Length: 310
Figure 1 (cartoon, rainbow, N blue to C red):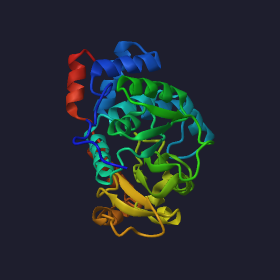
Figure 2 (cartoon, one colour; figure 1 turned 30 degrees about the horizontal axis):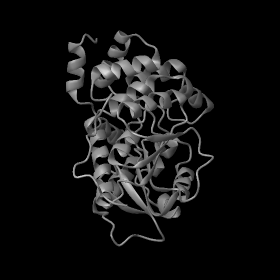
Figure 3 (cartoon, helix red, strand yellow; figure 1 turned 45 degrees about the horizontal axis):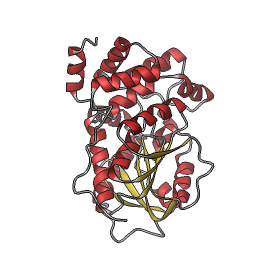
């Protein structure tokens, strides 16, 4: 595998980079009128998660708990389309995306076989494909997958979409990327075991999972997963060892092997580990900090108001 890019691609691209393109894409996906889409985007930029919170309350969802009702909510709501679009525009998400690009370039994995697990609207899959990766996109939601296919086409990238995991083989991928998914699932350790199986020896898992992030605007994050904040033991059990990452594990990189790699760069994540672990007990403080860090760039809201959103 070789590094071939002198300069990494931009972390924000169509339709994220244009209000008009994003509004049109969301109109096409949701069937909602232009003004409704504009108003919802503005509300989401002003208060991330506002539509998920409101619709979860209207749906009668018990927050932070796994249930059949939660599965039905995932199946029927359109609120995550707005939340995901705005989050993928945020400065923090762009920083995470750029860091991943830099990591893959440094490790000479730009053309790697990459599985994007639960990538929703396909933005991270698009970025990895723009890097030169051979990307497989897993997303069970056909609504999200339909949106993602248009994003791939719009950006001129080739991405393989799989609607289920039945055909995946052991050791099939060099890199698995799973961002903002594990905090939603009932058993993160089981999912991590699957990631390890799908990785080739020496492969990397890149993940970001704010387990402590429990507040009204994220009612689908599971309280039962709070105990995994700052936990690297479940990775080691799966043969995945800390290798690199940012201070608050946004993201953290694990390498598949029989033990810690001599070339690991774990200084930042080692400092962040006890800070994240404290989120198991003082999660309201951590949640507030996370909310501030993940806020939208205010220029998007200003531009939407100028376009007539309210």
